Length: 147
Image 1 (cartoon, rainbow, N blue to C red):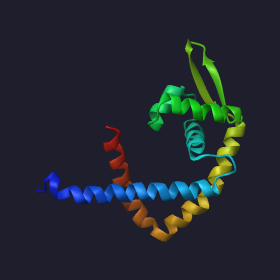
Image 2: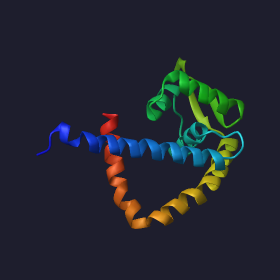
Image 3: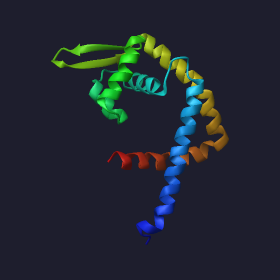
């Protein structure tokens, strides 16, 4: 059985690889995103498009593991661009509800179309089977980190 001291170099290597890969993929995504679109904007629009419903800014902040202030900043930019609708919650006037607008769907679709070739090329280079094999491990790692 290994002790934490035995696995420390392995843990450091694992997180070094994850952090480096994150930085590299963010750089590549930023280069192919439509003008003015940031990764955080795309992420929120993609989330809202997939859930096909309303969310509060607090729920979105929790989903993305960011502060409410950071989410408010992102939502303000998306609202200014016309990509989301923000309305009062009729049941609780202190809350707001956010939905994706038709323009937001178009912007999300354009961003998805721009990044898909780059992501698809990476998957092709790595191989479908290898990507499928690593997904459960990455998912489990994410779930452990969310605890």
